[in-house]
Length: 180
Image (tube, rainbow, N blue to C red; front, top):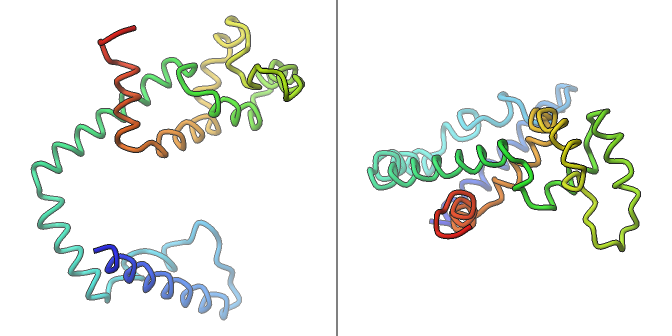
């Protein structure tokens, strides 16, 4: 199956490359993200027999499978709960997310508070991130942080990088009743 999908992807890449060359031939530039004319599955794969057969298999055995529906719903529930926990209390995110956000934060009032943190020498054990703002400063800026598109992107990237097992572990840590 992986060889078939690999072949399908290779074919799609070649078609997209040809579409980009054609666009460049008309003295237009292909821009990222690639627009619909260059890279939609309809344009790239509409005539590919392998794609059509795999799509048919997917529709018959995957999309309409009740066990997969159960697992998809469970996955969506777990991810929504993790997102809710991180939005409600961003300090539950790991340090590396805050370290990345500290480097790119553009909220002016928060940036003024972060700058002294960023000047801490690298060899100090304290991680350079907004987690270490005073409780009052963090509380005052929390609504700005959770509305900041950059913060939301970093949080989303962190969640998207989770494996199924890791996401379930995080859900259990956030909501599990076993221990505190």
